[in-house]
Image 1 (spheres, rainbow, N blue to C red):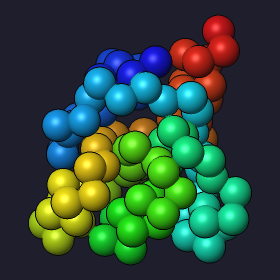
Image 2 (image 1 turned 30 degrees about the horizontal axis):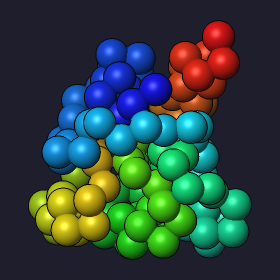
Image 3 (image 1 turned 90 degrees about the horizontal axis):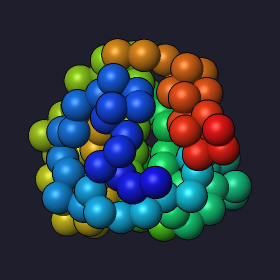
Length: 110
């Protein structure tokens, strides 16, 4: 699966997405950024409600190619700029983290 496939799976919009061809192997769902740093793996998307530039820094640190912002969170401009600078796609959806995680798991594992 590639980043470009995510919007159709999770009813989302790409906010910052010049990196849609990157392949993903899974996702990590957490709103605690220290947890993400300790447990997320490279090429997993970060599923969160943390809409700020620190989430971008953590995603970059762990090698997450995209951040999925749930619950319709607004995306601040400084987060978009940081994501662009780090090469990380930003995707926003109105659905919650639980449902995003389930849809992503189903799409990856059938």
